[in-house]
Image (tube, rainbow, N blue to C red; front, top):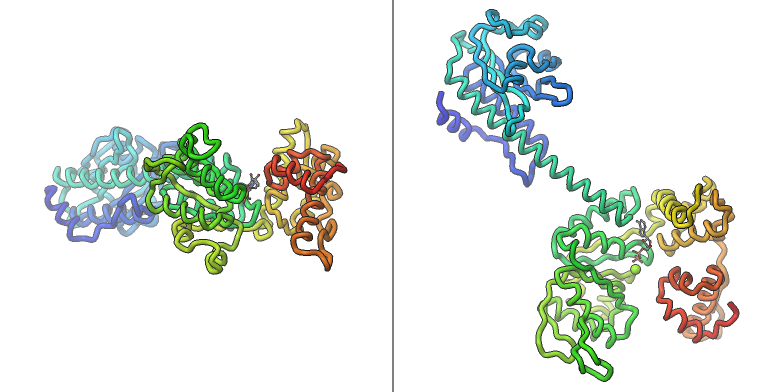
Length: 500
Ligand SMILES: Nc1ncnc2c1ncn2[C@@H]1O[C@H](COP(=O)(O)OP(=O)(O)O)[C@@H](O)[C@H]1O
Ligand SMILES: [Mg+2]
């Protein structure tokens, strides 16, 4: 038996694939079965087995067995050093024993129990590097003749193949585990809290798109965690060490937005006393997060489309083209397809941004995450306020679960912060939570007002409500309403809010 023969045998049979890309545990099992069958066949043996070494217990267990007693044999374990197989696992050297009954190393444990009489054995070690991971053994020629040295050579080669397959599979498993650990670490750091199927699906998708430069569009109501997810995508991908720049497209009028995105040259317009580097340049090599993209003006949409198509742009007032490598993640709480249908959002831009779409589920659609999220916020505020104990009563948790959370996680976080302030610093009770069901006041809901007046009336009351809630603290109120503090101050003077 020479190597050629083994190889030609290997070619004619259909050997199960073991490529890393589509590796499955089953593939390995099939492959190992195949190796033993092959060994038995080409050596015309009565039985064969493959044993793996458990490093912790230093015992061999049967992974693959053939022959009439194969099921019974599987129950046994063999100590390193015990019997022929144990000897090979100990020394790492192949053994050929013509007559086991005359060999002092032979253990009768298995044959006594199964009644499978053995005369001769060939046994070879499986090694990964210098580590012995198991053995392969072949029992008795079917025709009663003796094993030859060439059988040892053949078995050695087959056991090397098996060892290589196992080694590779373990490496792949290890890599998969490391990938999972990384995902868990990042998931923890970026606090995408939740065990619901909906949120798991979202994070899985995020990790998938993180690997490429593909544009991603995140859809979801306000406060569902769109920005948080964008950060996770950035951090989980190869651009993690570069900058992620955030730009809220709703916050700025068109000209200012353009200035923010592209920057300007000195003297580009009155007041442009210095060159300014735009966000696209700052994000070079990294990621730009365009928040509230649905609010972007049509003129700006056209400019954005151009840079996405060409990968180059000009600073305002500049005539040198600047090329950047930026990954674009955008988000909106609008029904973007409707915006496209009704002509407010360019279809061509939509397709550029929407290569991958991820939907953040509203909190009311993953209510099972509410207790978990509230625990998370309680821990957070407990730490922030240096409280020794802080918990939430079951009734209060139930109240949280029942509510529908139109403001999603942002609203939940705020409700808990408020409860921490209002409560006794030990346990949050239902009465510490806002009266979710009762509407505060139907601001602006009167016949006779114009829409604009109604909106203004609502805005004024809404701002007052939030200022009252924070004891007049503008920064906090602005944070809760998710607007800039300076913008809040402007609104306060516009609506002449004095009584706070
Ligand atoms: N799954 C989550 N786990 C923990 N905190 C979250 C989660 N989702 C959102 N948050 C928190 O809720 C708030 C709103 O999230 P954000 O990403 O700003 O939402 P959006 O951009 O959709 O309005 C942030 O303070 C964020 O940290
Ligand atoms: Mg946001």
